[in-house]
Structures are given as C-alpha cells and as structure tokens.
Amino acid sequence: MFNGTLDGHDNWMSFNDVRELLFARETESVVIDCYVNTYLFLPHDENPDIMLNFGYLGAALKGWVETCRDDKSKDQYFQRAFEKLDRTPNEFDLLFSPMHVGTNHWALLVIHIKEKEFRVYDSLRNKNRWDIPQYVEELKRYLKGKHMDVENWPLRYPDPCPQQGSGDDCGIFTCKYMECLACRDIQDLPFSQDDMPNVRAKLALHCINAYFNAQDRS
Image (cartoon, rainbow, N blue to C red; front, side):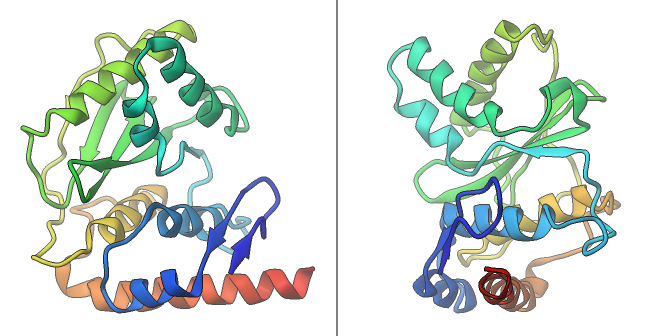
C-alpha cells in the first residue's frame, strides 16, 4: 500500500495491516512508522497543531540493537537511525523512540533534550521491565560518543499516563503518546482505553487517505 510515498521516508503498509488496525489486532512497527511519517511529519500548514521540533528514531531500533553481540554492531544501528534526523540530536526538543519490549508489547521512550532526561510512556506500566533501562544505557553510551553528556540524565516514568485494557492496543497508545507530546497537549494526556476504537478508525482512515493522496501526487 505504501512504498516510499513521502520524500525521505521508506513507508510500506499492506491492506492487511489496515484491516488488523481497524479490527483491534496487535499493531506492528510498520503501522507506527507510517503514522509518524504520514501524519506527524505533515507540513505545518496541513497539521498546524503539531510541534515540528521533534525527531523520530524509528519503531524497530530497540529490537535491532538487542540482537547485536558487540558494541560496534550496536553503534552501527544507532548510527543509521540518527542519520535520518535532519539536524544534530541536541538541536531537538524531543526525540521519539517507540520500543518493542518483552515479547509482544509497545512502549514509548522519549528523550527530552531540554529537560535532560529520558521518559518512558507505557500503557502497561511495569517499572521492572529489565530491557528498558538496559536499552537506555546503550543509548547513553552511544550519545556519549557523539559528545552529548547524558550520563546523569534520569529515566522517569511520567504519572499520570493513560493505561490500556486487556486488548492489543499498546501500539495505538504509543502513537497517541507521540501525537499528544508533539501537540504539547500533555496535560494528563487526554485519552483513554475507551477512545481506542475511534482512534483506530481515524488512524486507518488517515493511512488510506495518505495512500491515495500520494497516488494523486505521483
């Protein structure tokens, strides 16, 4: 459905992805990536509520890094992600890094550059997830090599943080966290589990519209 539809982004999304998005199935990284690339990165005149001073590191980065057995390989994956940014990391206010944690869960890591801290927005909050702080330490090591003094930046879990029910909505929550933060609409993060069917429908409709708009432009 998508294949490089926006300049600078490699988007690919099948109609099966849209169907699963609509009918509350587990969300894959491709849905999160397409949402960010075709909505949050729209030109400001098309999406005036979105703050543009944020960067996106991709939804698969954490998983890639964890498969590496040595620091050199990890640095290569980090390098590829950070090369997609249009400026140096310390020029952003926020850097978004959706994380696949455990075996089947999505959470959002946000690097707050100005506040000098890492924050995790998790719709199934569990501070005992060992892989999140481990990933943050790997990220700190990489950024230190890029002359960013992040060693003492704390890892925080904001509260309140909207929590999901028993379904497979973690990826959709991750998208909504990014949307609210990009809009600076962060007062209690104004959404809940009850909003998820409507959010899924709007997200699917947006992806379909983005596809046909891209076809018209080409």
